[in-house]
Length: 191
Image 1: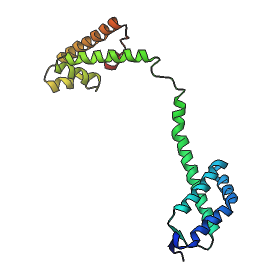
Image 2: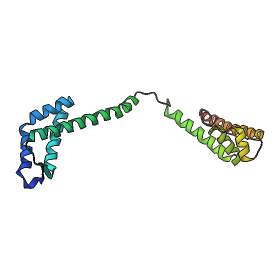
Image 3: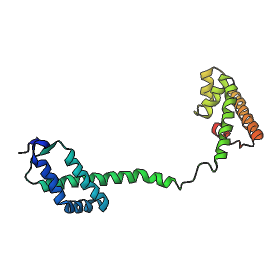
């Protein structure tokens, strides 16, 4: 029969903490066998002690050592699982430190962003149908025949609109490249 009784009404709750403190070395050894780390085993035993101090209800029991052993074992296993999860999640982050950067230099990245902004501004100045045709074809992969049917023009006209928009973007990218010495690599994102 297990009854849940308030900790403050029972000297029993304090007795459980006394049992933990009396067998502390044995309980630390138990956690150490699971965790393979003495410091983490000490932490688990300390967490059990704190839980006993904070718990308002302590079940009535005949074998407090077994109860404490189960608490320590469960907390040690939880700690082991949590540590394994952290290692699996954080290992890719640690490995990323040695990964090659997608951009060799922040200055090159800035130049590429500026070129891309120039291309986007050029597209904003293009007629709406021309801009839609270019973006649908180059970015979404829509065939020119479908674009022609959607906007109500011939496929040859769509081809011309895409060619005009492409020329406009290349000029914008080239003008920036000549003016600021930037690479015209931003065109690759659109072309």
